Length: 151
Image (cartoon, rainbow, N blue to C red; front, side, top):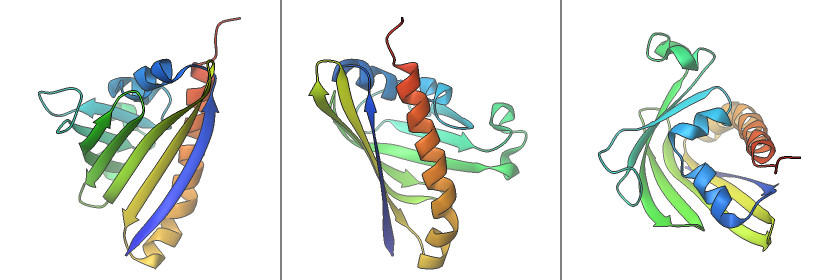
């Protein structure tokens, strides 16, 4: 069974700058809550790029404490800079599809729409939903803060 989660945030920058921050896979660790992200393929962008993300309390010490978190492996299935990136989650525990979509609101504001279609039972989704929602909400707020223009 597939369950959907959608969250959005307005980012204080143009769409190109937002895309550069989001498509910097290793850089995502600066704004994604308790996560370390890395590219696992020779190609670094575009369809076919493979990525791994470990999320957990000791993410900086991965793989030493790998049992205390979740390893999420993904493959990019659609690449439309600076507007959209789709991934397929291919991990042992997390499966489904994810989408990053950027919509330009004005010259200095871009809406970032994050959505996930998670393949799991209803009970599993009810257990993980609160943690996923809070984690993504905090991560999107951190991304927005990191993209504020200098004062």
